[in-house]
Image 1 (cartoon, one colour):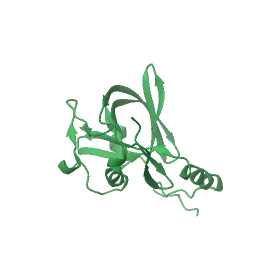
Image 2 (cartoon, rainbow, N blue to C red):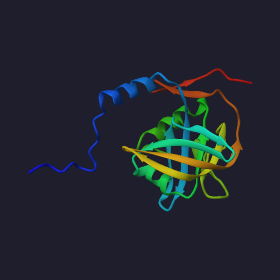
Image 3 (cartoon, one colour):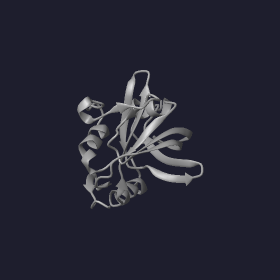
Amino acid sequence: MSAVPSSRAVPTPSAVGEGLKAAFRTHPAGVAIITASTPDGPVGLTASSVASVAVDPAAIVFSVTRATGSAGGLLSADTFVVHLIDDEHSELAQRFAVSGSERFTPEQGWSTLPTGEPYLPTARFALRSRALQVVPVGTSSVVIAEVLEALPGPQGRPMVYLDRQFHALPHQP
């Protein structure tokens, strides 16, 4: 009798997958906190996979791992907000990267947009968006989203994610 693989089993990365992880550890990426409002309350996560896709229509792309927890809430929400953040938000980015950590507290500076999504007014930019397409890839989902509104915020020192750490870049006037 053969064992039936568990749908919750975490796949072991192949040699190529391990090489891909090593390659991207040395490739700096911008940092975003993506938030949404769900019937169970606000959800959010940290992402370093956000990229611009098109200007007309305005579109972005990002990926999330799993379709449960915060990622599942984002994927089921009608709209969400992609906050492009600066170095002053590194602690907040770390909180949103760890399941179960405290989120959306008044001390963190959150408010709510008139459309209901959690909003961080101190983010460099907040992009209110809606998913156009979600493509499953292994244990991840790639989200292609239309940007509905771009909300500018204060410009601090840009932050990148490199080798599993957040790093500040020099402030650009």
